[in-house]
Length: 197
Image (tube, rainbow, N blue to C red; front, side, top):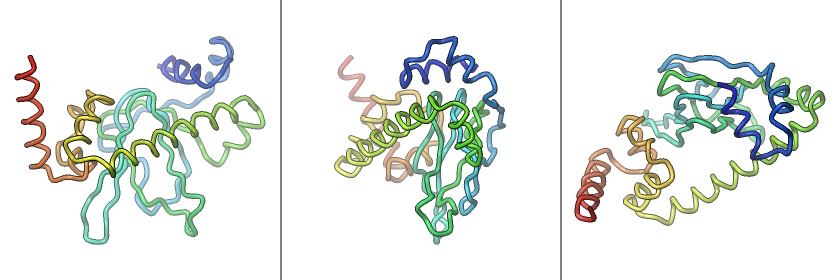
């Protein structure tokens, strides 16, 4: 299962496979059942995750009690809530397992110790964060300048299997639309594909 992590790390490092295996041999892997809350909204995050298998949802409940979905993390994606810039350090988001998940679990309190022991990890982590941040910025820019239909099409192109893995109301929230609007978009998209075929 750690092979998934090693393949991911290869993108950010010149280390050999055997060096990466050695680096990951003590990395903690844990299984979580579907429905497990990894982080409550308002809680101070002390863990970060890397998805080996499964799907994790990032969401928040607003002051009116509405649940808003902000992201879905699937295989080969890291899950970290960055909020050190806030005063109370409480997370504005919650994290929950949408499926049975196998995750690498990192302890944020020992992060610096790990970097001291394995200096190469710090440079690798920085590259990973830079890629994640760049992708998030690009996704956000595309999101605010596109129509709901364009958002759906972009999602289908980038992450084609995701729409079948998450409940429709959560997917609609993620796309910034109502579930019935998503149904209409999916129907139009399916009809268009039939015409093209």
